[in-house]
Image 1 (cartoon, rainbow, N blue to C red):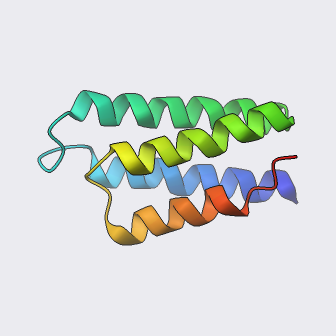
Image 2 (image 1 turned 90 degrees about the vertical axis):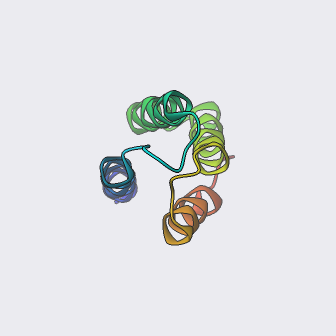
Length: 90
């Protein structure tokens, strides 16, 4: 069940990245793409091994993406922040 929720979250994140495409609003599209790539890598690592370190890395990468990519809508930011805050990294 936990992995299903995680993969659902990954799908939402991937769709948000495809929709926003890091274009005009962001003064540094490369930074947005890098942050997104880092987040997806961290999510994959966490999906493979749900350790505390991978959980923390994934949550941090979500926060970095939200704070560093200005093309996200407020709703997208809220969805991602909810995902990060709902993670129980022990």
